[in-house]
Structure formats: C-alpha cells, structure tokens
Image (cartoon, rainbow, N blue to C red):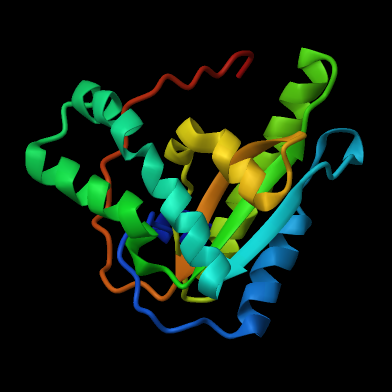
Length: 190
C-alpha cells in the first residue's frame, strides 16, 4: 500500500464485525506502532491489548464516559441523531473485538511530558495506519479520558497517563470521507 494512499484513505471506524483479526496481523500493527519516532528515543509508551472478558470489562468502564461527553457533543453542534450514534459507540466501542490502550509515564517537568505525549501520538498514528494496511478499522479515542483514573486502575497502571485507546477489528461499515477544514499553511523564505 502506498503511504500517501494510506494516509488519505484511513478513516475512523465506529462499527465493527465480531470476527477476531488474526494475532499475526495485530502483532504487525503493534510492531509498526513501536517503530514510531520518540523524543530522545525514550520510547516511553506501553501498550495493553485487550480481547475477550478483559476487553468487555474495559469497555464497560469506557462507557462511563458517556455522561461527560454530553456537553462536548452539544458544543460540537451534533444533531440528536448523531449524538445517539456517538453514545452507542461509547457503549460498546462499535463491537470491536480488540481494544488497544496506550499509556505513557508521567514526567517531572512539563517539557519532557510534552515530548512523551507527542511520541505516544506518533505511535498512535502508526497503529492506525498499520491497521488500515491490514484492512482493519480503528478509531483514535480520547473521550474515555474522562474516566482515565478507572481505566488506569483496571490496567494496573495508576502511576501512568492514559494517552488514548483504539478499538480494532474488521469494519462493518465504511465511514464517509470527512471534509477537511481550511487551515493556514505558512511558507516562509520560498
């Protein structure tokens, strides 16, 4: 798969088939994530891959973020129909059979913490692109951060920060192409 094609065609999937992806495909996705660049090459991230009963228990905790999401959905101007879709997604993460949680350590100084977060974000992007290359759907999720403490406790990582999670599985519905917003790109010295 061409890199530019992967970047332009990757989507956030919110409806999944129950079929479990092959472990080998998941291992390739994870390995691609682990090859992300990181500040001072610290590679300061940890991944937890959940399936079966642990996944179900984790998702039940994730669903507790729904009430906290209501003001966010309202502010975003979503229709009630669209809000229902989001609520349904947060209830069971679209039925994805696998969830990956990415955690990072807490640094003493804010500059290093920013580097750790940015490095984890690079890992997340690699995961999503690799999932797409494996014909798997994924969705970068931070809305669950409203219940971060509960999720970290479940993962046994209370001394860390939850960066994000992503459900992973075979997509049951191809998401539409979201419009791109106009953003300024400044070219200086050209």
